[in-house]
Amino acid sequence: GCTKKTRFLITIQNREKCKLFASKDAQGFWKPTPKRKSIFDAKARHIGNMRISWYYYYNVDDGRDKSSSRLRKSEWQIREYYLASNYLPQNKVERTKCVINDDDQDEGTKSQ
Image 1 (cartoon, rainbow, N blue to C red):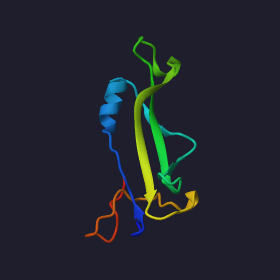
Image 2 (cartoon, rainbow, N blue to C red; image 1 turned 45 degrees about the vertical axis):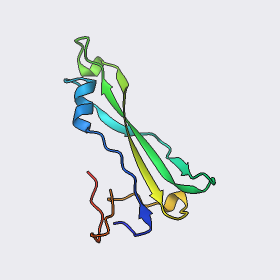
Image 3 (cartoon, helix red, strand yellow; image 1 turned 120 degrees about the vertical axis):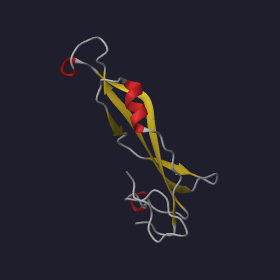
Image 4 (cartoon, one colour; image 1 turned 90 degrees about the vertical axis):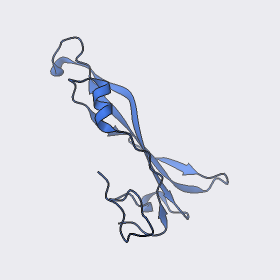
């Protein structure tokens, strides 16, 4: 769940459209970058972290089957921002099962 001290800025892309854009026949997958990037404010204070996931797909446009096709990284990406209202160490930033925490709700909305 979310605590009141955690704020989230969310950007959303339609994953189905990303798959169709890559190739109608290709089965792809989202892969996050190994390291999370730190986010700093204007005073160089650490205020959260960002994780970028890229969409990878198999190039099957040349008629070959998936097993002999090269894995390619598309231009599609999803960025997830984890922002804290006060300083939190990187391993303490809330990351689980929360998209946004409204004042009307006790718990955050579960992510997909």
